[in-house]
Image (cartoon, rainbow, N blue to C red; front, top):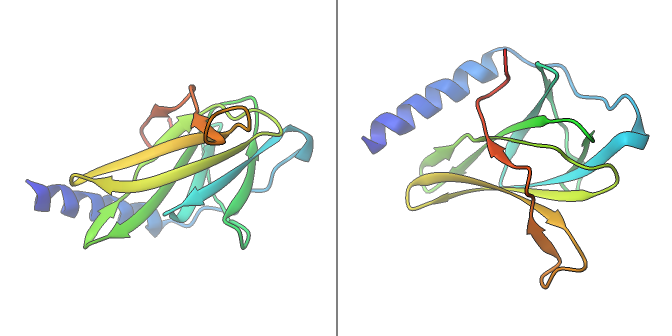
Length: 137
């Protein structure tokens, strides 16, 4: 079963990469949030049903639209396993998030953490997160 899931995931990822998405450019920098990707390769964003490629800066950060649902998609190789999750959440303007992709117990995991100086460790789980399908149609 594990090999079948891996094969399906790799084929799905290959199909998604077959059609290149245009780069994402925020319309207004006033209404954006910052996202840092951890263990993500070639992240994409789906906004209003359209898929775009994200290009993180040297620190792994990108700006995403705030105040509306965004779908983030990316991949991760680890120990010959490929993880390709998608996550949906509503980022808030001016805030910073970490999107972390990992494989645990042979399962693909993705977490969205909100930077919060008032919390014990400076991060807390983003409450609006939802696992989701790729882009809604």
